[in-house]
Structures are given as structure tokens and as C-alpha cells.
Amino acid sequence: TATTDGRVQRILVKPGTPVKADTVVMIMTSPELDTALLDAEFALKAAEADYKNLEVTLHKTLLDLRSVAAQTSADYNTAKLEADRDTALAKENLLAGTDAKISQVKAEQLSAKYEIEKERLSINNDAEQAQLDSQKVKVEQLRGQYALKKSQVDQLKVRAGFDGMLQSVPPPLMPVEEGQKVSAGTALGKVAQPSHLKAELKIAETQIKDVA
Image (cartoon, one colour):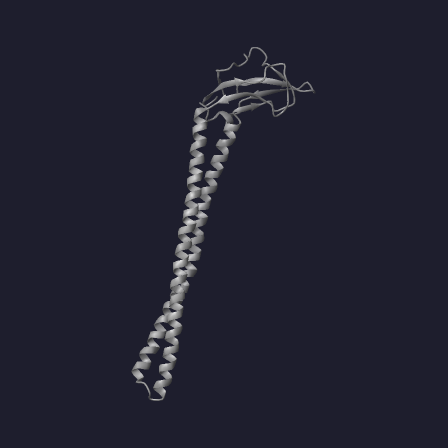
């Protein structure tokens, strides 16, 4: 049983005409399918734009983290040099021991901060990839939906499917006419092949599912 109906817009080839497998014999219409295709296209484009925006945002975050890590590394190296210098001066009694200790503590603090920044960078790389992968899955899902809708719309152009001679459907079936509504699975015609086998032209269930 068909879930919805379709309408024959144009019959391009009349019975008794030789046809090739890819000959379009009639065109069906489906406003609902056309709308669904547009919706799927817009959804795909929006998801692709979101992916690009995410890439830009994540890249900016990465640059910011790298900048902080680089600055922390520079601060640590400077503090380490100052601590080594002050330690040497303190040994020569040219600097108070407490001042040398303060320099050493400062260097240790910056060393710990630098390690944290490096770990943050590493974690960010994993998190960034996870976010991109998640958005990419969404894009691929929508691309699949768009491809499906496009295929369904393309199939509204009913093709012969075989080389041969187009024939009308046999009684008691009635030939379809332009403007006529037809159900999924309705026989639209027959193609007589050289082997004398006949192939029915039917609206596939998958083609007409969303047709209105």
C-alpha cells in the first residue's frame, strides 16, 4: 500500500516508441520532495559553515594557548638564569641568601606553571580533535540525507530502465495520463525487450515515499 500519492506532470514518450535504458519516459512532480531537498541542502550548508567556524575558533584558541606557553617558557628561562646568578652571588657573599632563595622560588614557580601550560596544550589538542570529529559526523549525516533526497527527486524522472519498445500496460490496468495521481507501485508502462521479455515501469516505494 502506498503511503502517499504522486502526480504525472508530463509524459515524454508514447507507447510504440523505441527507448534506451536511460530514456526519460515521464516526469513526476512532488512539491514535498522538492521542499525536503531544499531543507536538506540548507541544513548541510549550515553544518558545513558551523564546521568552518569551529575550525577558526579552535585554531584561535590554540594560538592563544601557544602564546601563553611560549611567554611562560621565556619567563621561566629568565627566572632560572636570575636564580643561578643570585645563587652564585650569594656563595660569594655578594648577595643576601634570602634574595637568592626568593629568585630560586620564583624560578620553581614558573617551571611548574610552564609544565601546566604544556599539559593544557596537549589536552586542548585532544579536545579540539574530538569537537571537530563530532561536527564532521553531523556534516556527513546531513550530506547523506541530502544525497538521499536528491536521489529521490532525480528518480521522479521515470526512465525506461531497459532498451526496447515502450508499451502500454495491459488490461485491466489503465494507462496513466498527465495530471493523474498515481500510487507507489503503480504500473506506468512496459518495455518490450529484444528477448521478448517485458519489464514493468513502476514507481518504487522508495521513490514515492515522500511524494505528495
